[in-house]
Length: 232
Image (cartoon, rainbow, N blue to C red; front, side, top):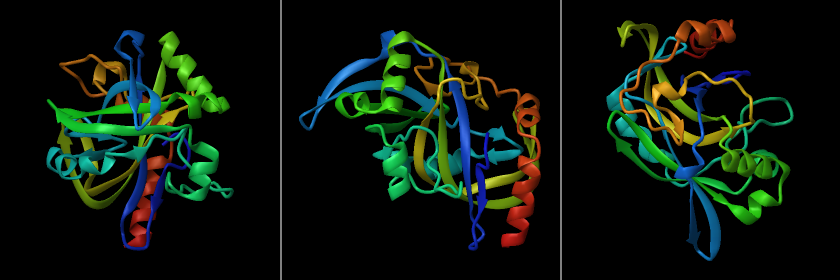
């Protein structure tokens, strides 16, 4: 949500990006050969059950129902956008030409109270692109990076509280398009203590500081509510 991040569709669904910060630990990275290619494999986590972000609740049952759609998706460098700045699928022409660095999301599964996944980064493809080289160097050096999940969901306007955080909307029928690797230094919504992102070891994970996040994304939630209301 650091840029537009939110798109309301004519069928009442919403497209959204969820940003997570992670601290790298190069000791957790491994090398794998797959289909005749050499990969750098980086483990990670996303979507803690019941997390509230930007006053939107992501319930456990909905995450469990939709997380499998992350398997074998592209892990683009940043969220894919077209020339007009509109979000596009990672497998679209704009997504592939401008954002693909040979990275994929694999081995997705539920692990405890969150979703585990691995970034499989094709060394040859990534090394041939400026952004791919930046990611490989950051992982090797243990520099902080971030991931951000792009998904579509159907919103339900419902207020409540989860984990001490108030929400005004519930995300349902989640369908994941990608889990992007964001450019180094891009601020994210959650911290390593939240147990999200690649190479995270947190077991007892707390909610992130939503007030800080909303302060950094002033107006996004209001635009989301207005867009959903206009689409319904």
